[in-house]
Length: 343
Image (cartoon, rainbow, N blue to C red):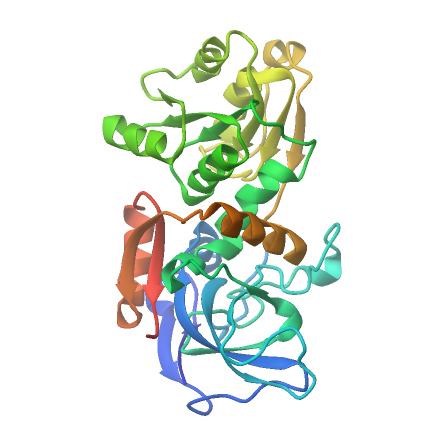
C-alpha cells in the first residue's frame, strides 16, 4: 500500500511516499473497516504540523492529512455501522462522538493517528461518517475539518435565526463554508476580503449580500455596522484571531456572538481588545475547534437536504502531493486544495 508519511518535520520533503504493508490491508479487529481512499484535502493545520507550530505534536511516521473520503472495501465481523461499498470520511476527532470534547479524545488523523493521504485507510467503524451521496469524492474529501468547523461556528452557540446577520472574514475554506451554511440557514451574510472585485463577486455567488474590502477599509467593523443599519452582526465567524478580533468586536451586535476559530496570526501573540471597543459591546466570544462526530453527521444531513456543494480551488494527482503542499503554502486558491487518490 502506498502512503505519504511524515518521516521528518520542517520541510515538505519530510513527507515521504513509500510502500508499507499488504497491497490491501485487513480490518484492525472485529469493528474495523478498510477504506479505499479516493481523495484527500489539505488544511492549514497540515502545514502547522509540518513546521511544528501545531499545538499537538505530530508522530514521526504517521500517514499525513486528516481529511479524506473513500469507499469501504472490507469490514470486520462485528461491524454494524457500514457495509462494503459505503461512502465514508474519517472524523477529524475520531474518538469525539458527542457533547463536549474530553482529553482522551484529542487524537487526530494525520497527526497522532494515521491519516488519509494513502491508498487505503484502516479505521474503526466508530471513527467514520457517511458522506452525502450527491458529492463527488473530491467534494466529500473537503468536509472533516473546514466544513465541520464552519458548521460548529454557526450552530454551536445560541440559536441562529433566519434573517439574522452573519459576518465572515476572508476567503479561506472555513469562511467559504460559513458563507454557504449561513445562506442555507436563511441568514444575511456580510463578508470581508482583500481579493478585489473577482473574489467579491465569487463571495456574492456563494450567498454573501455585501462584501467589504478590509484593505481599503481597515476600520471595517464600522462599515459592517453601516451595512446593518447600526445593529451589527449577530454572529461573527472569526478566523483571523489576534489580527482581526478588535474589528470583529466593533462589527458585532450589542449581544452578538463571536465564534473564535483561530488564535494565532497577524504577528501578535495574544488577543487584545481596546477598552473603548469592549465598553461598547456585550458580545459573547466562544471558542470552537472543529466538532464531534454528531455535528459532522448533522451537517451532512443539512448538506444533503439543500444539495450544497463545497468549493474546490485546485485538484492534484496522488503523485503531485508535494506540489499540492507547496501551492497551498504559497498561494492558497479560492476553495479547497484536493489530492485525487483513486478512481
